[in-house]
Image 1 (tube, rainbow, N blue to C red):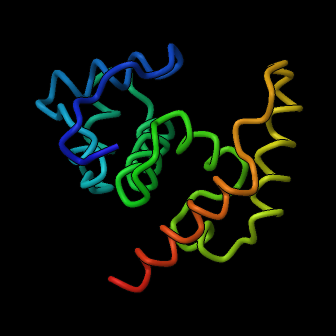
Image 2 (image 1 turned 135 degrees about the vertical axis):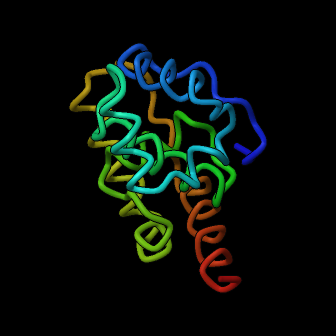
Length: 134
Protein backbone atom coordinates (compact mmCIF):
# COMPACT_ATOMS: atom_id res chain seq x y z
CA UNK A 1 0.00 0.00 0.00
CA UNK A 2 1.07 3.50 -0.71
CA UNK A 3 0.36 6.46 1.64
CA UNK A 4 -1.66 8.05 -1.18
CA UNK A 5 -3.87 4.97 -1.66
CA UNK A 6 -7.51 5.56 -0.77
CA UNK A 7 -8.89 4.02 2.39
CA UNK A 8 -11.33 1.39 1.17
CA UNK A 9 -12.23 -2.30 1.24
CA UNK A 10 -11.71 -2.62 4.99
CA UNK A 11 -13.08 -5.68 6.79
CA UNK A 12 -16.68 -5.50 8.06
CA UNK A 13 -15.45 -5.25 11.65
CA UNK A 14 -13.91 -1.87 10.84
CA UNK A 15 -16.82 -0.30 8.97
CA UNK A 16 -17.60 2.19 11.78
CA UNK A 17 -13.98 3.29 11.90
CA UNK A 18 -13.85 3.65 8.12
CA UNK A 19 -17.01 5.75 8.12
CA UNK A 20 -15.67 7.97 10.92
CA UNK A 21 -12.32 8.46 9.19
CA UNK A 22 -13.93 9.31 5.85
CA UNK A 23 -16.39 11.69 7.52
CA UNK A 24 -13.43 13.46 9.15
CA UNK A 25 -11.70 13.94 5.80
CA UNK A 26 -9.09 11.23 6.38
CA UNK A 27 -9.28 9.47 3.02
CA UNK A 28 -5.89 7.82 2.51
CA UNK A 29 -3.68 5.27 4.27
CA UNK A 30 -1.13 8.05 4.79
CA UNK A 31 -3.73 10.06 6.71
CA UNK A 32 -4.35 7.06 8.96
CA UNK A 33 -0.62 6.45 9.40
CA UNK A 34 -0.17 10.04 10.61
CA UNK A 35 -2.97 9.97 13.20
CA UNK A 36 -1.94 11.18 16.64
CA UNK A 37 -3.22 9.75 19.91
CA UNK A 38 -5.18 12.96 20.42
CA UNK A 39 -6.89 12.59 17.04
CA UNK A 40 -7.69 8.94 17.77
CA UNK A 41 -9.27 9.92 21.09
CA UNK A 42 -11.29 12.66 19.44
CA UNK A 43 -12.48 10.39 16.63
CA UNK A 44 -13.50 7.64 19.02
CA UNK A 45 -15.36 10.09 21.27
CA UNK A 46 -17.32 11.65 18.42
CA UNK A 47 -18.83 8.54 16.87
CA UNK A 48 -19.13 4.77 16.87
CA UNK A 49 -15.47 4.17 16.05
CA UNK A 50 -13.43 2.57 18.83
CA UNK A 51 -10.00 3.82 19.83
CA UNK A 52 -8.75 0.21 19.84
CA UNK A 53 -9.74 -0.36 16.22
CA UNK A 54 -8.41 3.03 15.15
CA UNK A 55 -5.04 2.12 16.69
CA UNK A 56 -5.15 -1.18 14.81
CA UNK A 57 -5.80 0.67 11.56
CA UNK A 58 -2.92 3.03 12.34
CA UNK A 59 -0.65 0.01 12.89
CA UNK A 60 -1.83 -1.58 9.65
CA UNK A 61 -1.20 1.69 7.81
CA UNK A 62 2.27 1.98 9.28
CA UNK A 63 3.25 -1.57 8.33
CA UNK A 64 1.56 -1.37 4.94
CA UNK A 65 3.02 1.99 3.95
CA UNK A 66 6.52 1.31 5.26
CA UNK A 67 6.83 -2.19 3.82
CA UNK A 68 4.59 -1.79 0.76
CA UNK A 69 2.14 -4.47 1.93
CA UNK A 70 -1.49 -5.03 1.09
CA UNK A 71 -3.86 -4.18 3.96
CA UNK A 72 -4.65 -7.88 4.45
CA UNK A 73 -0.94 -8.74 4.74
CA UNK A 74 -0.37 -5.92 7.23
CA UNK A 75 -3.31 -7.16 9.29
CA UNK A 76 -1.96 -10.73 9.16
CA UNK A 77 1.41 -9.60 10.49
CA UNK A 78 -0.17 -7.52 13.24
CA UNK A 79 -2.41 -10.30 14.44
CA UNK A 80 0.51 -12.75 14.32
CA UNK A 81 2.32 -10.54 16.83
CA UNK A 82 4.57 -8.66 14.42
CA UNK A 83 2.99 -5.23 14.75
CA UNK A 84 5.96 -3.00 13.98
CA UNK A 85 8.61 -2.65 11.32
CA UNK A 86 11.23 -3.39 13.99
CA UNK A 87 9.46 -6.64 14.94
CA UNK A 88 9.40 -7.77 11.31
CA UNK A 89 13.05 -6.77 10.83
CA UNK A 90 14.07 -8.69 13.94
CA UNK A 91 12.40 -11.94 12.98
CA UNK A 92 13.74 -14.74 10.82
CA UNK A 93 11.94 -16.06 7.72
CA UNK A 94 11.05 -19.41 9.38
CA UNK A 95 9.73 -17.57 12.45
CA UNK A 96 7.58 -15.28 10.32
CA UNK A 97 6.18 -18.23 8.35
CA UNK A 98 5.49 -20.16 11.57
CA UNK A 99 3.72 -17.27 13.31
CA UNK A 100 1.53 -16.33 10.36
CA UNK A 101 0.78 -19.99 9.57
CA UNK A 102 -0.17 -20.66 13.19
CA UNK A 103 -2.58 -17.71 13.12
CA UNK A 104 -4.19 -18.92 9.90
CA UNK A 105 -4.62 -22.41 11.37
CA UNK A 106 -6.19 -20.94 14.50
CA UNK A 107 -8.60 -18.98 12.33
CA UNK A 108 -9.35 -22.18 10.40
CA UNK A 109 -9.36 -20.32 7.13
CA UNK A 110 -8.91 -23.56 5.19
CA UNK A 111 -6.79 -21.85 2.58
CA UNK A 112 -3.14 -22.58 1.90
CA UNK A 113 -0.66 -20.42 3.81
CA UNK A 114 -0.22 -16.96 2.35
CA UNK A 115 3.34 -16.48 3.56
CA UNK A 116 6.17 -18.70 2.36
CA UNK A 117 9.90 -18.41 3.07
CA UNK A 118 10.61 -16.29 -0.02
CA UNK A 119 7.86 -13.79 0.81
CA UNK A 120 8.91 -13.69 4.46
CA UNK A 121 12.50 -12.99 3.42
CA UNK A 122 11.32 -10.16 1.15
CA UNK A 123 9.28 -8.55 3.94
CA UNK A 124 12.17 -8.84 6.41
CA UNK A 125 14.62 -7.27 3.95
CA UNK A 126 12.22 -4.38 3.32
CA UNK A 127 11.85 -3.87 7.07
CA UNK A 128 15.63 -3.86 7.56
CA UNK A 129 16.06 -1.38 4.70
CA UNK A 130 13.37 0.83 6.20
CA UNK A 131 15.14 0.80 9.57
CA UNK A 132 18.43 1.79 7.94
CA UNK A 133 16.87 4.79 6.18
CA UNK A 134 15.27 6.20 9.33
